[in-house]
Image (spheres, rainbow, N blue to C red):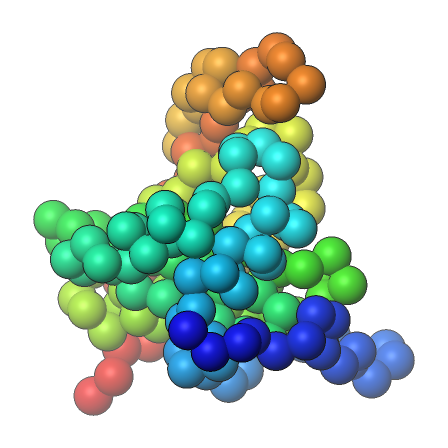
Length: 174
């Protein structure tokens, strides 16, 4: 694969201005190199376990799966049986709270709507408050909980929060 962009290339937003999640969608061609994506994932996660380059490559080879990437983050989604599932989103720590995650999630919702899905789903660790807030702001609502779903490397269990968003009101291409 091609080498990915250097870490932490995200630009900070101008002071006092919030990024708009409906702004330009991420460029799906920033990187598709599984090694680079695995590095970003490993920097972003301990729970759930970081995905290896092989796991990422195998996931991306699955029918219905798509990748959106930005210089310091990426999202993998899947369309299956008329529903969209956000499988993972990872953003380097240095690029967080600068709109990268919001743009990736907005891009995921746009892809899902363009593929005629009615509902998008995801699972998120119950202790990941920042991600839950990001998804809530994007219109996702909590619909369930999987008790003890994640097992952190430090031991114990963490519940997964299941979230969903209807896409009927999301703009669709003409």
